[in-house]
Length: 448
Image 1 (tube, rainbow, N blue to C red):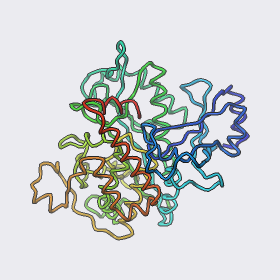
Image 2: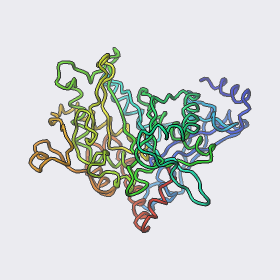
Image 3: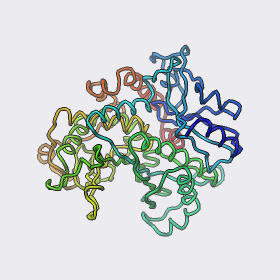
Image 4: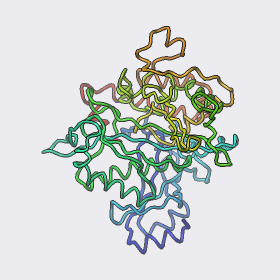
């Protein structure tokens, strides 16, 4: 959208606040807002932000080890093409934004900028990624002074669809009005748990959609006097909330290069190599796709969340599921599902990291291990060894250590970004370690 069109839309729709939304590495959706009087300045040169903000934790603490302290300035530069009037909050509009230096250069710690660089690298191979995020979340309602899960019906319960209809239709309609389309909806197995997969989009748009989804979900919930939690494991005895990332690779002729009808599983050589790269770097990848201490409580045996490093066709206990293609159009619908992610992940960092790991498999022509066709937890040690199956890191700290040791991922992501991310997340762990009992759950519940 042209800047003049944005100014006109703001005037014609009586918009009072325009948010410049950004996401630093911590994964929290943050924003600065301007009134119409500040809109032209925002569109021309953005709005200021301390450079330390990209190292601040989800608890709003700045690690003393960070290289970015009180001195230093960035600009939040809105992307005019993402301008949207918020349908769930009268008088508000939003633009997604990049973080730039005051000289106008991309800020090296900007996750959206990292994804842009990653997609350019992918394009050098003649490839485009299509992706979508498959979100699970927990809906809460207030009873007295406390918040409780909304409904306790069985998974896929038609009754639950009845009970949640007003809220869910509100979310679906609000997303549609912002150009984001929900593909399916179903109640999940935990109390108050639902899933709303959104339609796929090319690279950057897919990650942008995830930000819009999270914002809209929370905004519509507040309008319905409810709250949502994207916390991976909101209760020990409940199923956790995942955020599976579906993706496929396409060439410039609009051909799905993952598909090969001659392969036993219809998976091309590029597909084999891409999966092999992801599996090779998976332990470090988890630092980005499962970025909280609570994330690792979701990875349990037989939990349908995956906790073993492996892949398999329609195997929901594998890190990567080769999703069945539709019989009428296998060449268009074959895709991969990265299952070791949850909704607290920064979608820009997660997509960039998974893509870079996959590219390393193509670059090195890695050979893919055979697929696992059963629950890996039921295999013997000898069978796991045969398929090179290993268990995930059991804590965020272990995943961060794996990332730090992964020279390829550190260089591909960027040494400064990786180092600041490690510092930030380790500081977050220190904060969590001071808590006891259910305090971790209470702390994370409504942060994301």
